Amino acid sequence: MADISKNSTASGAVDVVIMAAGKGTRMKSRLPKVLHLLAGRALLSHVVDTAAQLSARQVVVISGHGAAEVEAALATATGAGFDLSFVRQEPQLGTGHAVQQAVPVLRDDGIVVVLSGDVPLIRAETLRDLIATCGGDKLALLTIDFADPTGYGRIVRQGAAVQAIVEQKDASAEQRAITEVYSGMMALPANQLKRWLARLDKNNAQGEYYLTDIVKFAVADGVPVLAHKINDPLQVAGVNSPLQLAELERAWQLRTARELMEQGVRLADPARLDVRGALHCAQDVAIDVNCVFEGEVSLGEGVKIGANCVIANAAIGAGTVIHPFTHIEGGKPGSKDFIEVGAGALIGPFARLRPGARLGAEVHIGNFVEVKNSTLAKGAKANHLAYLGDATVGERVNFGAGSITANYDGAFKHRTVIEADAHIGSNCVLVAPVTIGAGGTVGGGSTITKDTPAGALSVARGKQLSIANWKRPTK
Image 1 (tube, rainbow, N blue to C red):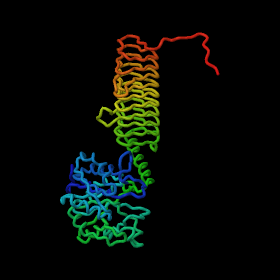
Image 2 (image 1 turned 45 degrees about the vertical axis):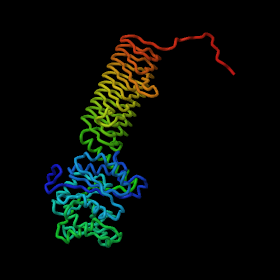
Image 3 (image 1 turned 180 degrees about the vertical axis):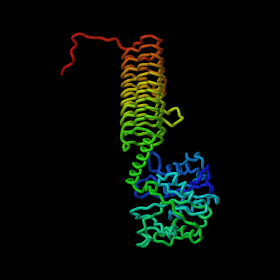
Image 4 (image 1 turned 60 degrees about the horizontal axis):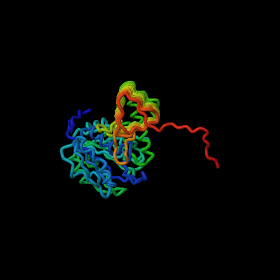
């Protein structure tokens, strides 16, 4: 394999052209096909990520149907280490016509790699091999053998050399029997591509400008046409319907599950895992069934994730146990809303950590406890039926069942501070802003509206009254 260094190959710079103009009629959706989600991200975003792995100098996206939406969806990719530009194909007159739209923005000195925005599982190493096959002066086609090649352009050879790609509608009976097909991906010199695109016509069964016609021009010009054949159909599988999208989703997730298990992660069932972002696991991580990971999630050594958990944008410390049905929903990595859970914590079952939750080591958050924009120091516990919002909780605090921090006055949020070793009884309301002093105790059923001294017992509830021989009203 050729050595691929930053923004170049041994043969020249790499510029990637992604065709993303199609409507995707069979998706039966108003959303442009390339923006449908695979593993939580747009199909097109997966292809752009692969281009980034090639250290592409330039990525040109050819938009058409829903162009404004497509271009807006990729706006954040401009900081990915390559120049991103958009050209529009309006109307859509075939694949050759699509790539013609990119000609004005392509430089003459590079290798152009043509990809499809709805083929998300192509691997960067496969494309590196394709680029190496091109070598900067040849036309390299990515091909594969299909038992049923219906709908694909057939690879017509003379010996080892490729002579043409014949589209299904233009193929003879003999050519339709060919099982080697063109994947839709190629690599070739930019200067040659521009010359061949200028010679395209639409004298074919579909009345379109076929990109595949450049093969016959290369042959006529004496430029070698080589096929890099692979045997993994998932890498060339496109999405044209909701069924195909679902099939690729499962394939993606199973590929991810296998990679995790190869790293030593124990999955109870690799078929029941969904990773919709990046999941980083240290040694001896165990994940039960039906768990969903979104955004950026890291699991420290020995972490155990129970069944049916949803975890988004969180860092979970070593030795932590996340019990079943826990929902962790952090904000973007690097933001104040990203969630951090310290080593040895116990979370759940049926717990909810919302944006901004930061838990220290050995914190316990039990069933039906919600934590939002709050920090809990080492050893703090809220074991059941509680709400902690906009709170700063000290070490070894015990927060009783049914207790809440009342953080919202109808217009503004206020903070509650519970200092170390405080004990909050059951069914208490701490009305922020308020501070509970270190080592203090709040009696069960209290509504606390003023700061409490350290070490004190604070009780704020109506006096108990019993009326003897009370008779309830009757009809």
